[in-house]
Length: 360
Image 1 (cartoon, rainbow, N blue to C red):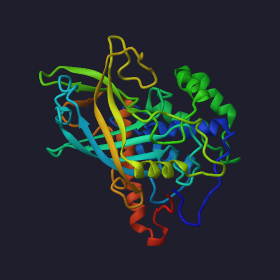
Image 2 (cartoon, rainbow, N blue to C red):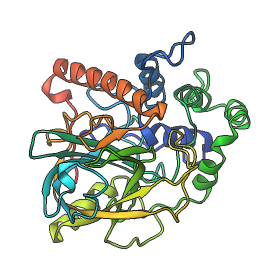
Image 3 (tube, rainbow, N blue to C red):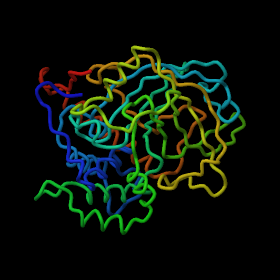
């Protein structure tokens, strides 16, 4: 959504490396250092958020990543199918759990054109009846480009704008990918990605793995996704000249009725990578449809309920646990850094300068 009087031209989609840089920034948001894994070359949350800010530009009061978005609300209706695998209360049969969500575009520029990247994100906060919360940030992509926070940081540096030219240096980007063959599956997907022109028809996945723990204490590794009931349509291109079609489309669809996704849990088999988000699991893995996510309302992100939510993916209820994937703890640390920055800035901005939207 655009702030009044401050429309900016969309980025040059011909800059291949710039697009890849924004995509990977948006795929899991800001990553930082937690727990000393990267010593002596310590990467702090501040350093990670700084590199993302350098790429997206300075926009006080906005998130450092996924800056352009819209709040949504609704509920998760459990069908009970997952109760045997997780003791989390929201998976009991017939339980309805309120959710506060946010659909967004990757990158730190709140004025970016919706067609500038082929990924959208969906963040959710489930508010359980006993006061627990489950927060998750999902992305419409099959795999993450790299395996570690250090590699992610290096990727941002390699694909970010050169201070002298304001554009990415293809030689730096090429050198990075040559040194990181694990990025091959992600790059292959990027070349053929054709997202639909709607938030409502996307499938969003956790990318990182987690564990479900059942009533007997047994835990099983999973990744999850929300799969839309609405079939995908179109070729991913908006009407000519329209740079803000995603939110407008969502509002139009919600006016006609609720939108629904199915929460599907995929279970790892022996040998599947649990702590490496750059490695996909085969589609043949056991999966369970745990229930239906129903979205029935929207609000502008400037004053909607999602504005003040930090969608930290390590905030989990009993029955769901984080895996050892180093990106999870890193996300948690940098999300906090980004949250503190934007809320501090927003508190010092005059009313007319605070983040707002003029559409849909």
